[in-house]
Image (cartoon, rainbow over all chains, first blue to last red):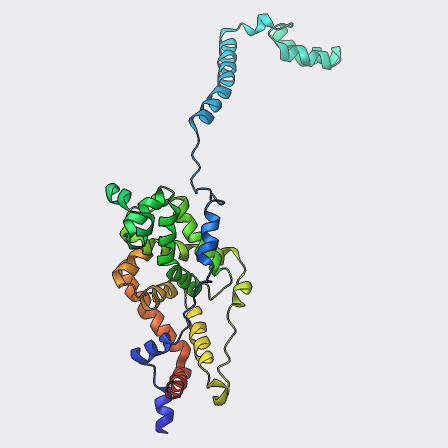
Length: 119
Length: 203
């Protein structure tokens, strides 16, 4: 009975330390250092941070220059109404395109004014 | 310090301080680095082993830890923090691998100890060792690391807390929880294990 109570009592800190001292104390292999030193000249591990070079950045800006120039040219042509003189049709290219696609009677219906306004 | 370093002959590396060795290793001196490895590789290996439950990857993790130091020694700013830094890198590498690998692989590291074994079968020091190792392996990672650093590597609470990048209070809390967890896990079996140890000590 006494022994059972003793067994059920929680471990004390000293007893736990005693048990922990009996845990494994693993040792690395004897050739650990030799194998590691052999790897020094072979392996170059990549760093976690990838630094973008200045040259790489300048290339990105170079590629953006034609795009920016194209945008500026488009804006200038659009606002100055010069584009219509460059096109083969009149400035109303949308209506020209529609009339080319639709039969002539249908086109006249679409674009004709109501009768009361004509009079 | 540079003058002192220049004055060192190759045979003097053994007695050189960590700071001198680290500086020389930063200049790709393999002899100085080899002395650093010799000083700390056992401790790094043991911590990695304790954290991953004795998995076969332990050796590779310990090597990788030192390779990180060799490839980028500038990561470590103070030589006094070298041991803690190595422990931290090793533990991070273990935890990274835990995330990447399925746990089933790692479970093979320890045989599950059968606590229902009869008394004669328990009369074995190896059984006691395995039982304690398994109980430690079952602890949460942070508690395991705190226990490994303080109990098994004999680091002070301050040094261990610095290595884990936590406060001393937090470390003490982890240690207390680890010890309580071990007591719970071992339960009444713990006293039987003590009896086995006592028997072994008498013989």
